[in-house]
Structure formats: structure tokens, C-alpha cells
Image (cartoon, rainbow, N blue to C red; front, side):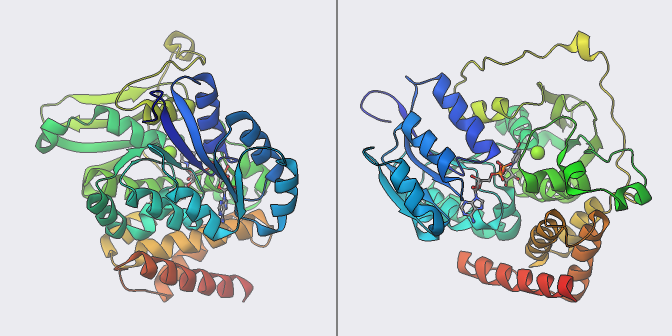
Length: 387
Ligand code: NAD
Ligand code: MG
């Protein structure tokens, strides 16, 4: 906490969907939060604008090619500017009370780990890192005494309704899923879907990679593994329900028959604000939930034939070892291939399944292991896609 009582905040991935929403909340609460460091991938113009508005001491951009325009845009500003992957890690090492881990994909691992190693509160959006590194990351959290605050709307919902004192009375975790933009499409229809169609999520406005993951439902597969690690819950005690309205963000069923849920409009500002203010709450000046207007909340079982990603994620959890890491790496490469127009939408999950059937790696024992094994799995997936 700074001398003026402000919580100091680092936003990794400030230029992304989660990062922009986080900074929006900080901008609404200037007396509560002060920004210490910001990072971006390649959007230097937006990052420069954010630096001018939030006045961090340090800013890092991953893409070294845009260091010069960023530096020129910030000439005269009292901020230290750096570029490249090491600069992103340096930003995470800068002192602050709270860090948003909002980089997408395993690219965020080193920075997220550095934030964890400082033993501070880490608001956890980047699910790919936890899926790939699993207990290796959890060990770092325990060792450093860091606090992981789940930001994914489902996991934030569970975090809000999971009673620590009654952990042994938890029967099941019920993750809800919107079903994505292709919820009612046949496999034939899905085969013809373009990146633009996959990016048009009916309820949530998100970055490109997670939007495609929502369309394949691999997002829910990653979230199953994320929930298993965050809440120490066996896969068999985690259910998934399709809930097209995205109002009930997830539920915890207790052995006494009570089912506790967290509800809200589908707006990431709500779980992000919860993590930002935790253990307190701050007002979020957005549209209130109007249940009369919504009128009906519906739930159905996911179709594992049209959406095999969920089945794959369950198989991966049962297999253990390095399987989750391979699944994540293959998914990241296949989704990038789809977004770049190199493969079709319905090639994404079969590519991952093929990788899981033909390529196995040992369970990582360290963060370095995660990085090396991930890179091997990515290379193999790229080769498969080129074949
Ligand atoms: P996004 O693509 O909008 O933003 C990603 C951020 O990471 C950007 O700032 C980008 O510049 C940065 N980045 C990308 N590659 C980088 C690299 N190699 N090095 C450094 N920075 C890099 O993604 P998003 O939708 O904000 O998602 C971020 C994370 O949060 C993902 O893991 C996603 O699964 C998770 N998440 C997002 C939402 C959502 O509503 N957007 C919801 C739940 C979870
Ligand atoms: Mg989610």
C-alpha cells in the first residue's frame, strides 16, 4: 500500500480486453488505485495513451520493433520505457501490491511467475499458464505466499461462493458455459465458419484467442483444468452446464443440498472489480442485472459430439503428466492457424487430438521445464499443420 493509502497496481497485458477493462475500473477509482507498471504486446499507440492517463513509473512493450514509436510518443513523460520479453518480466518484478495477469497464452508465464514470486496479490486471468504448469505454478504460489485471485468469470463466481470453512462439505463445482457463437450449429455448418464469425461471441466481448476457444468450447476445457487446480477439486466433481444467457457465472453444490451461485450481467468488469477490490468491494457503474427483463435462465447438458473439446480436456486430466501442457500448446498453435486462415474451424480440435495421440511429454517439474516442453509441443503442432 502506498503512503497515500492507494493500492499500487501492475497491469500485464494492459492493451488487451482484460487489461483495458482493468484500467477502466482504476480510472473510475483514482483515489483507491495507483498504477505502478504497464505492459503491452505491440499496440504502442494505445499503450502510450494509457501511460499518459495513468502515469506508471515503468512501461514495457513486448514487440521490440515498436520501441521507437512508443518512446517518441512518450517523450517528456516521467516514465521508464523498455521493450522485449525481458522487459515484460522486469515490469512484473517492479514493486506493486496487486498484479493483473492479463497476457494471453503461455507467453505470459515468465511475467506471471515473477509477480507470484513477489508474494503479492495476483489477479489471475491467464488460464493457459495454469493449465500448462499446474502444480509447478501452485508450488510457486505457496512458496511465495502469493494470493491468486481468480478473474475468469466462472472461477471468480466459485471463489465468491466457496466457503473455506466448509470445504469438506462441497459436493460439486458446476461451471456454466454460454455454448459460444456456434452453440446451435451442426458440424457441417461449423466447418464453414470464418474467423470473423468465430469472433462474434453472443454475450462476451473478449480477445481473439479466447473468443475462438469459446466457439470450440476448448475454453471450457481449459477452465475445467483451471478449476481443478484453483479449487483443488477432482475432475469428476466438476460439472459443465450450458447456460446460454451467461447470467449464472458458476455454482458450488454443497452436501447439505444447498447450491450457491453468483449472478451478474456478462461483463468482465464485475469479476475484475471483485479481484481488484478484494477482500472489499467497489461500486461498478454499469448496467444492473435485470432478471425480469431476462425472464428465463435455462440450462442444458453440453453436446460432446459437436463439441469434443470438453471430452478431450477430461481425457487430458485423467491422463495427467504433460498432457494438459500438450493440449494447451496445440490449441494455441491451431487457433493461431485458424485466425490466420491456414486451417478451418473444425480442424482445430482434431489437430489437438492428433497431437495428444502422437506426442507426449513428461510432467514438467519446473517453470523452465514448462517453457521447454511447451516450445517442443508448439513446434510439433506447427509441423503437423504444415504437413
Ligand atoms: P487480448 O488478446 O485482448 O489481450 C492480450 C494481452 O496480452 C494484450 O495486451 C497483448 O498485447 C498481450 N500480449 C499478447 N502476446 C504477448 C506477448 N508475447 N508478450 C507480452 N504481451 C503479450 O486477450 P484477453 O481477452 O484480454 O485475454 C487475456 C487472458 O485473460 C487470456 O488468458 C484469456 O483466456 C483470459 N480471459 C479473458 C477474458 C475476456 O473477457 N477477455 C475472460 C476470461 C479470461
Ligand atoms: Mg470464463
